[in-house]
Length: 415
Image (cartoon, rainbow, N blue to C red; front, top):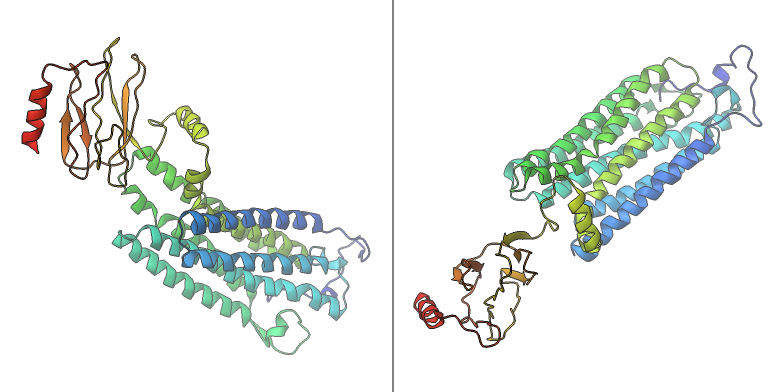
């Protein structure tokens, strides 16, 4: 901001006349970009809050930070669009050189920079507080997360103070005709660009070791990590924004090129914001994603081995043309159906055609384990977390195996 020049300090380039009535500007691009970014962010925040409030039933500090960040994002777009309406997106020589127009152009842009710093810090703090929620058992990760929270809060507070008090008095930031002094804005701009890029990378890489240590299949780990890596787009735009600075400080057409830099700032901040909200999207999809569609998509993936991630499927092959009779247990009664409770490890049994395998879906292995013979086939293993009632055999039309009494006596001795 210290390198900003008032319009009267420079004239139009040779052969170019100032156009105060219908100048070339970037208004259409800015309005479209701000509209798209705010729409995407609003949808993302709404999905996040809905998921945490009505599906997870828990709102945390990170959710309140996301709500605050959304308000700041709206304010940031508002002051930038207002600055553009006053002429900030024009060439410098197309702005009225009087003092009132100069102040009207630069003041909202300067306030927008302050809001941008607070917004960037809020989004990164929201991500870090979310990590504290999901990585409670990983001490190393929590240590790095807490360090990141303290570091981000401290660094961005210093950046905000340097930006606000760049000029003495503060209004001289947008009105160079006032008496006072200003520090060079080049150092502040470059340092803020480097800090944004470094903190983006830090926030993205902190959870990766903890995710890789989870007891998941390799490709599932990669899919989880890829969600965090979506934030690399924010890192990329931050680096592009940093690359634009050298040309910005060589040109005198500051209003035109500062608008271009602000476009990259807008993309960077909203990309990071969207990623912060999408971190809770798996819970939303698990509740509302059509199961049939999920199964078809899973079968189409090259690394899919099951159709539902929440179940471990054990398949038992059977011989052709043979009827299979399953011993069913009641956990609390002697009914013929399986009583499914939160303590039961048996979720579902299915009888399929002769040519299909028999499948049992289990949520987790529980003990003790009982062996249940099924005719001449090998034993099937069921696990339950509480003592089971004596088995009720199911045979077709009076058929009974010859070793049924021996089987009952063996089971009685086991219990």
